[in-house]
Image (cartoon, rainbow, N blue to C red; front, side, top):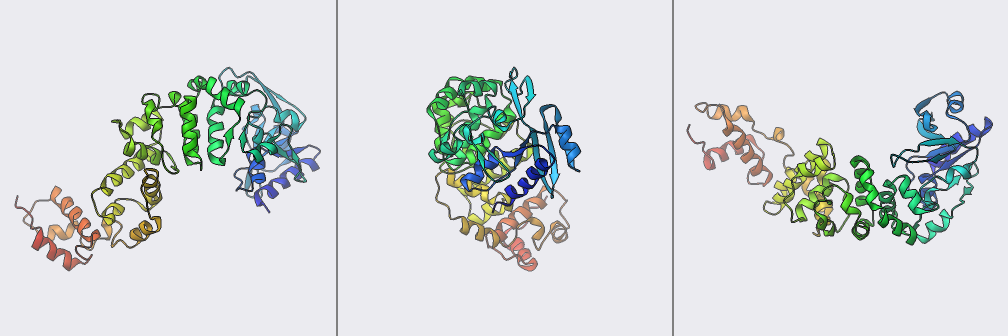
Length: 396
């Protein structure tokens, strides 16, 4: 039983009991038929946004002008959109004209790919006017109607086609493939932020390597930040999935021949400071991995980036025992400087004749490395003896 689908069908039933019609649509139907985890569940209905607002006690009016509201029901959120058709896409994203219609079949005609143009009724029957179920079985990404029209309406659909192919292990059908290549230049009309979302998801897919190759074949990379200036970069193929731009950046910095900085990536792709910071940590750890003992490398990583570190190593073609890395991290003597048995105040007390200065931080760094490397135990007395015997401070 799919709990998300079943709970959404309660909303569908509620709408139908009020005299309307409603269907689960889009990715939830696709994923349910593929027996893979269902994410957000969207609902299409014959009722107008105002009628939905009047019907349910908790409704968020997020996009009434386009027929969309969010219904809160049984602690879940459902995007409910009135059946509609769309015309004209002057900005290559939003329709110039939206017209509400009364049937699900008319609504499905505006959707991008056949596998996303299916609907599920209250009894879990499937409405499938464009052969989406057949394409699911064949493993095909095929545009609804004429592919060139779908891509001209919103060129991001080119990236979405490749992303779905990567995630599902599908291929583009011949007409969709041909249209994607012919209209790739329209991606210039798309915001960097929207491109980033799709490229990131593509790199996370199980068939990411194959579809990065398709990006190259279709010359889509000529319209992607960084790759447009360094086209041959797309030829460097990760040997595994990369989950997020921090990993993507770290991989290409590790394998690429170009003198690119992390800030080049984050600026051109308009990425967050968090992505920049994590990419910097990962890149530093990857360099350290070539020279330092594994405990020292792992100590430099926050636990939340351990899997990212493993992902990038595997993508770079290295054989990695993930369980061994996690075990090595868990068994580190310390995981942060504050866990040291000696702190700055202890060093000042040991060497009262020295002025406070950078030497304190330098000594603490040396102590951290020695403790993590098991040169000395994390014991106050042992650390003090080590300092006096092997690292006497220089006089000012």
